[in-house]
Amino acid sequence: MGDGLARRTWADFRARWRAALGFHLLAQLLGTALFTPLVAWIGGLIVAASGEPVISNFDIARFVLSPTGIAFVLVIAALTLALLLAEFAGLSFIADRAIRRQPASAAGAVAFVVPRLPRLVQLSTRVFLRMLLLALPFLAVAGVAWLAMPGGHDINYYLAEQPPEWRRTRLLVAFLVAAYLLLAGWQLARWLFAVPVLVLERASPREALASSTVITRRGRRVIVAPLVAWWTLITVLAVAVTWLFRQVSDAGLAWAGLDVHRVLPLVALFLAVTILGSFIYGGVGLAVHQFLVTRVYHEQRSPLLRPKPPLEEAGDDHARAVAGPVTLGIVTLLALSVGGAVVLAHRLEIHDDVAITAHRGAKVSAPENTMAAFRAALDAGTDFIELDVQRTRDGKVVVVHDGDLMRMGDDPRRVGEMTLAEIQSVDIGRKYAPQFAGEHVPTLEQVIDLVRGRARINVELKYNVPDPGLAPAVVELLRQQDFLDQVVITSLDYAALKDVERIEPHLKTGHIVTAAVGDVVRTEADFLSLNSARATASLVRRAHSAGKEVAAWTVNDPEVMLRMIERGVDNVISDDPALLVRVMEERRQLSRAELLGLRLRVLFSKPPKGATDPEAVEAL
Image (cartoon, rainbow, N blue to C red):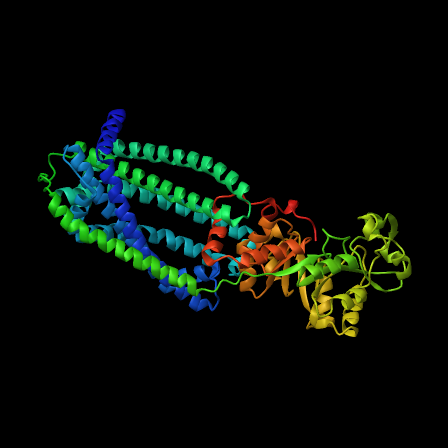
């Protein structure tokens, strides 16, 4: 029975696939035309309410949970269901014609569906309300479980800390969702034939649901198993094709690099292929689904049910007379809605410029944390120079990263055990390259004199050994040099940052986070300094919502630089500031459409490790 049913259904589809896919295209255009202005309008409302140029997931969640948002979600769900049933009606018409071996066209399907729209809307309303009523008990239990959680803390606490009560609530909600989906699926299976009954028998919505229930009592196994098999087959094929397409797109964009003249055509091609693939998956999937439902409806229909009148013919002239204006209206509405969405998008300001920080100076051009590296960073046009400070035995604040000079100058002595004169007698340039012979560890005061008026400084308090006097000494030096407003203080040591804020509350501080337990956004520092792989778009948005900026380190790959800009970070820290300056300058020359195309490449390419793997990122 199953194989025979499959062959008969496939024969029906092969006979009328052009009409089915043509009607699916019109349905998709209508859906786009209706939903685009709705979503754009709601997006505008959320942006206006948030007061920010870009909306975050928290703004969206806040809207969805409001009375207006709930109403909007319900309207969208009801409209989606109505459009789906209208498409099923047109596909049932085409399938019925195929079974009867009569001609059918997309225009004829439009002419057939239009006069039946009122009854289809009534049917979708009945189904939607019943599904909503079915969900109410599950929503009530989930709401009680949420209210019963002790503490009633902010959602961010539960997401970050994952307390036991949160895990239990999540398991309960997952169980409720699964139970609802099973119950809803069982109920919808009883109504599979409602659309064919309504449109092919001129039944009322109530009669259509009742008749479908009667038919499925005898034929539920006959119809459910083939439908499950069909959607499983087509989904497995889609996943396999998607995987293959991803290999091709990864290779293509790897070849293109960041060359806009290569990237944009590839992105356009990949978008076209994606849209076409989605259309084929949706069109063929829905068409065969409804052809199968209609075929089983014909074969399972009981003689005891209302006699089925012959389906009225829709002549070519009549079909064109109805379908022409409808199609023109859909295309016009689509053009207006897309145009409105484009206008709204252009009204939104996108602030994605970032400040540039040279990590230990321009490390790729000169020995790190040397005057030569700082001069190279200034020549590159950096906004900030990042450097590490420690104290010598005689209390001087010097610029050096390691606890000793072995890596830089083959001297094993500890920084805290040497005087300023001793530490500056060590050549830390020759080992890097002969032309840098004579470079030595500078003092923070020397660097301030070099960069004053040309860049700001990111001073990292480096605690290779405990030194409770480091933070006070640095703050006092900045006061003496009248440089407090030209510097930010960062450290892995949160207690040290608290000391800085206590001594000089106006100094801007940044917490360097490599790994953390808890919600890093809750830090009292003014900004976060994050491993680039951990600076996800969602975390950046959360930080911004909390009033904190985000700096990402250490970014030396142009692709990762662009990813950080697109994720919305405020500051990118790089060993190669000249490269970052070039990337940003080239990016500023791009048009809005080119920027969009460049951003869309992330949909089709494998992200670089610097954007996803924290272990692949050089330590700050």
